[in-house]
Image 1 (tube, rainbow over the protein chains, first blue to last red):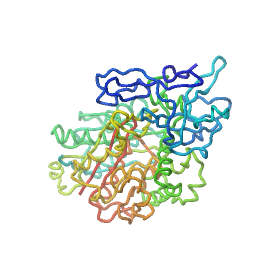
Image 2 (tube, each protein chain N blue to C red):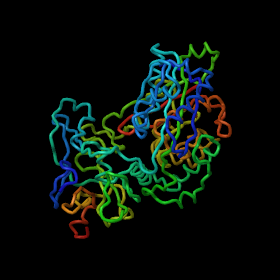
Image 3 (tube, one colour):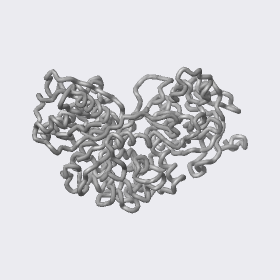
Image 4 (cartoon, each protein chain N blue to C red):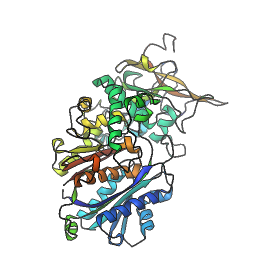
Length: 145
Length: 395
C-alpha cells in the first residue's frame, strides 16, 4: 500500500506522480493540495493530472545519517541513501525523491535522464509501504534495478 | 521609507547551554537597554520573535520576555516566521514607531535547541510538506543545502575546496567574536576530515543548532535625538517579502518547486528577490555595501548569497571568495561576525544577531573583526515556507 495515499499511482511498471493542473492557466503543482502558489490560478479549477514519469536530474545528494521521525528506518539498521531532485519533462517542475538502492552518487550527473519507480519505503508485519523513487533511465527495464 | 534608530544592542553568547530560553532573551534585553541607556520602564512596545521548540512560552515570546523583565503595561506582539522571525519582529517594531503608535521599542528573540537535525512537529499530517519530506524522502534540512551545493559544482565548476574555504574564512572571523559558539580556527584538512552528512557537505560545513539570544532597542529618530543621540545607527530598509511565482528552486520544506510551464521564465528565484525590497527602501545598491551578514546555513550556501544580493553575477561567487574579496580586509567582507559557521543557529535570535553585528560594525566597535570605515551593511536570510528577511543598516 502507498505510504501516503493520493500522491502517486501504484502501477509498478509505469508509476506516475499525481499532481494538479490549473485548468485555464496551465500551471502544474505537486502535490495537488499545494496548488495556489501561482496567483494567476486564484479561482481557477485545479484538475487532478498524472505527471510525466521522466525528467532530467536537477541535483542530488545523500542522507548519511538517520533523519528524525516521521522518517521510518526500513529494516534493523539505518542505511545511507541517495536523494535526487528531478525536473519533470513536460511540467517544468522539480520533484524530490530517494534514488533506488544500488545507485551511488558517482553514477549521477546533473542533466541526466531519470525515471520514476515504485519501491518499498518500509514494512511492518502486515504491509509493505510504498513510495516513488527516482532511477537513472533504463536501469529498471534492463533488469539491473 | 523613513529610518528608525537603533539605540542599543545585546546578545547572550551562542552555545549549547541547555537552559531556559527566557534567560538568554532577558540577558540580551538587559544588555541592549544598558547599551542604549534606556530604562526598561521606558519601553513602550515589545516585539518578540517566537520559538517553536520551547513550549507555549515560546509561542507568546512578547509576553514571556515582558513578564521576565517585569510587566509594565507596555504593548506586545509575538511573531513567528521561522528563520526570518527576528526580521519580522523588527519590521513590526518599525511599523509601530513610524506610525506613531510608539516611540521606543524592544525587539528580542531567544531559543534553546535540541541536539541534531531539526524535526517536524509531532503528529501525522499528510498535507504538511514538512511532515511529508521527512516521512517519504528522508529529506533533512542539510539535504536541501547539499542539493544547492552540488548544483553549484555542476553548473559553475565550484569545488569542495571552495566550500571548505568559506568555513575557514568564517572561522577566522569568529575567533574574534566573544558571542560566537565556535572560536576555533579551522583549516581545510579539519573540514575534509569531518564526516560527510549530505554529499558533498561535511559536518563542519553545516550550520549547527544552537542556544542564544539577541535584542535591540529601537526608536524614532526624534526620540533618539531627545536622548542626545544625533548620529545613531539607522535601520534604512527591511524586506520581509514572499517568493514570486514561479520560484524554480526547490525550497525547504517542499517536495517540489513551482512549475514554470505556464510562465516560461525560471530565472528569477526567491532568494534573488529578497534583498531588492531592502535596497529600494534604503536607496542603496550592492556597490554601496561595506559588508554583509548572510545566512551561511552551509558553506556553499554563503556563495549563493553573494549572487542573490548582487555582489557578483550568477556563477561568479567562488571567484570573489578565491580573490579574498569577502574575507576581513577584502573588498566586501561577508560574515565578519563569523556567520552561522561560527555561531550555529538559534532560530528566532539569528536575524536579530545579524543586526547586532551590523550595529557594532557601523559604530566601529567590532574590535579585531572591524571592517574599516563601514557605513552601510546588509543582512539577509529567509524563513522556510517562504519568509524573506533582509535588513540594511546605515550610519
